[in-house]
Picture 1: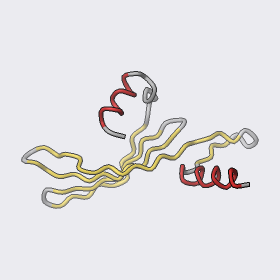
Picture 2 (picture 1 turned 180 degrees about the vertical axis):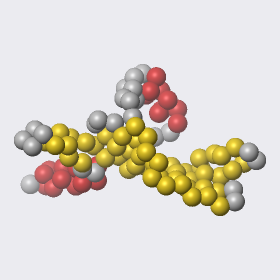
Picture 3 (picture 1 turned 90 degrees about the vertical axis):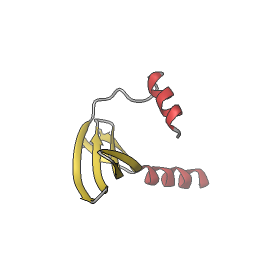
Picture 4 (picture 1 turned 180 degrees about the horizontal axis):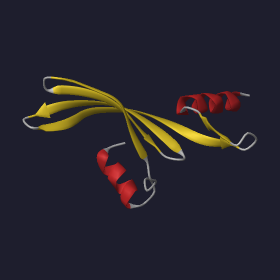
Length: 99
């Protein structure tokens, strides 16, 4: 998704709006480059981000962001939350359609 589409969806309130908790897993840097792994957690989804940065004069800029989105579901029988990656969901959907 390009930046303008993302901004348009936020402005139209089709995405976003949920409060999220930020967790920084780790940060490493050397000279003018850095990497970080962070998580944004909300009740419905967890975003795992792998970020790459470059320092331009005095400002750090993100040059790459690879994100894995993990939905969170409540298992009604046990009352516990379950995590399942989108790739696993897509695979299960494909298997179901092939039957």
